[in-house]
Image (cartoon, rainbow, N blue to C red; front, side):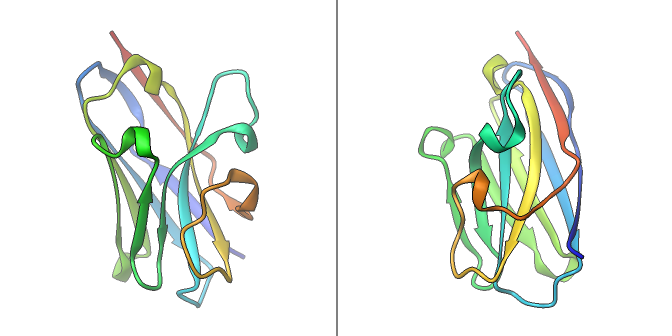
Length: 128
């Protein structure tokens, strides 16, 4: 069973930075995409938006166009860990962020509904 555990959320002032961490376990292949999904208040997590995704096998990375100058996704393959570095945070970044994974793909995955496994989420609150 694939398990994902996020950490690193919290409260930060606008302009600050946060690094989210996702530790994954339970898969034995590199054909895995891991994504970070931002859940807007009042919406289901599957209605959120994928802000970044990484394909574990060849380290391909994708970040949503509007966040490319602020967010960075990376991995430490040896630790089965994926990171989301978020800089210059804005109040509108306030959300619960989920780490999610899908096995058996060949590229980054950019739609929440395509992910099969989800972590418990971590809250990021940005105050102005």
